[in-house]
Amino acid sequence: MSLFPPDPRMERFVDALRVHDALTDGASAAQIVEAFYGSERAMQDTDCGSSSLKSRIRRLVREARAMAAGKYRSLLGKKAA
Image (cartoon, rainbow, N blue to C red; front, side):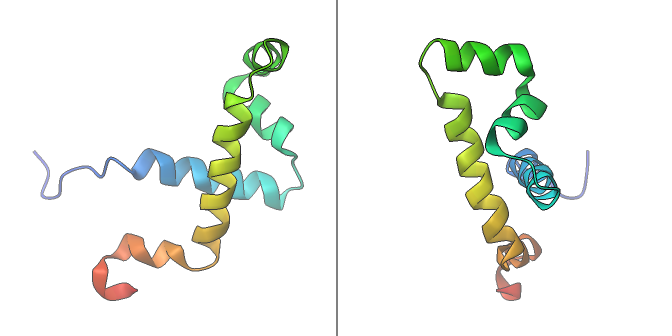
């Protein structure tokens, strides 16, 4: 048992950090989708006319940009904002 319970948002924060790194390196949304989900799944998503993976990445891009713009302070607690 840990002193602090695990934060259920942590996985999303890590994904946003990975997206930020990819964007900083010049990756496109399609390249990020491939890196996260693999080329086969990315092609399946595109072939069936769905864009759910791209939508997921777009939301992560927004989150990553917000975190880089200062939202990361919210991770420190209520007093840090």
